[in-house]
Length: 97
View 1 (cartoon, rainbow, N blue to C red):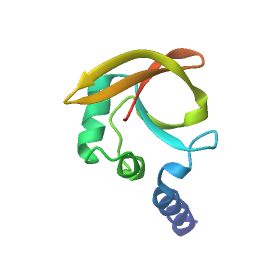
View 2 (view 1 turned 135 degrees about the horizontal axis):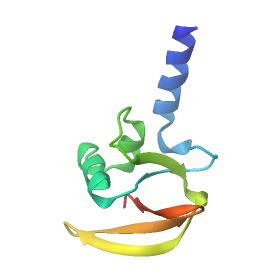
View 3 (view 1 turned 135 degrees about the vertical axis):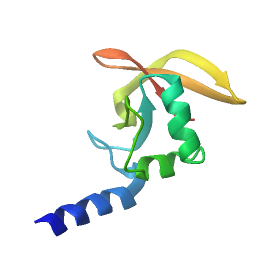
């Protein structure tokens, strides 16, 4: 049973951002911009690598892009534009560019 579980986890990690909770393309998101920058830096600013990482900063996760709404806030950091997108039932989440 343990080998099967590990195989499933490795298979999901290899699939990268193609899989997300709720289906659709996975997008790395965080509740705050600092955590998103930490996750982004650890993944070399690559959303695919970020999605494959087993450890995520607190308040960060993968979500299906279609569950996100309009831009509520924008911030520029290090020349990159970050957006905080609306989500149903909660505060906006910061999305990796």
